[in-house]
Image 1 (cartoon, rainbow, N blue to C red):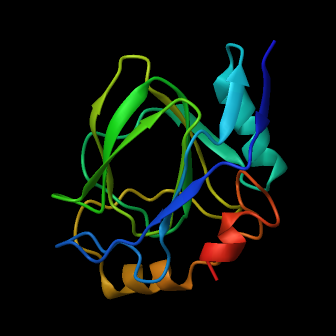
Image 2: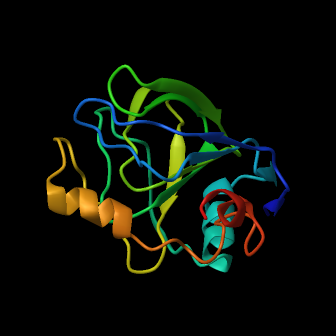
Image 3: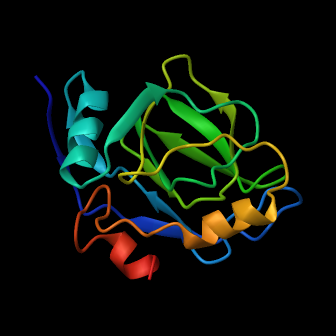
Length: 173
């Protein structure tokens, strides 16, 4: 049995500028939730899926993070670290390296470059997107249409962890 709860976790913001071929998001910061979920049990991935679903972010996959730089133009992406740890580079080559571990969450606005630099063997992430959005995998400079898509992509109504009054409502205005 998994006992857990979403907590009012400290949230950090990270605004990334364009980095070579990686557009990042010119308006929205990355949201970093430190130990967003307190876990006591064995199926943390199911807990993330339940939390994301309850807040209108349907989970799409369980896996790691690709070990190559990429970004998405058709979906804002939330990553819930359900086990292990990793060093993820955000913002493209020569970007910012963050260390994440079980319970942490990253909310990446469309256009944000990300890459797994190093991870433990048990590193597992749950990925989710707002309804109607999905993760196209982009590994080259964006076209003007892709840049427009990043800018026009609708904001989610709810924060994936804290719901209606969570950090999305404060930082993604």
